[in-house]
Image (cartoon, rainbow, N blue to C red; front, side, top):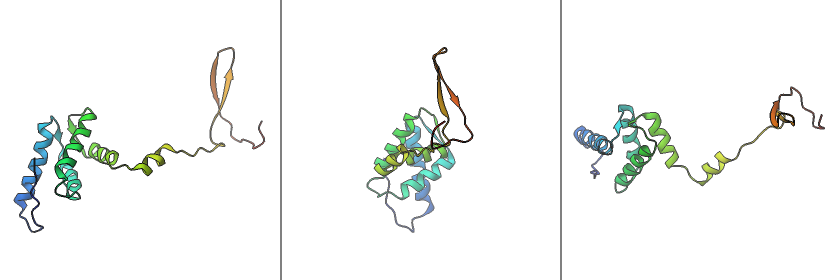
Length: 129
């Protein structure tokens, strides 16, 4: 699957041909590409260098296949592309959470039942109970 680079003044027939190639690439891998997802896919591919378009397309198709779906929607494509474009900072930011000690419910252990229960307290003190 190769894409022509074409100039900015290329005819609409070359755009239609590219859209067909993208749709066929998904279809050949057993996926149906929703119309809005095809528009999004063309937008994603327009930001890539012409020599990397095939690799990017195959990577996105592989990631869609891993989701175990048959129809690729705009939401799925957005999710897949955002997962593929994450960098180290994004992963670190997602893994860190700030918790407010005053909003977190307390755990209380009940020895007779041998289980924990959540206690909700409206006002918590910095000095304990």
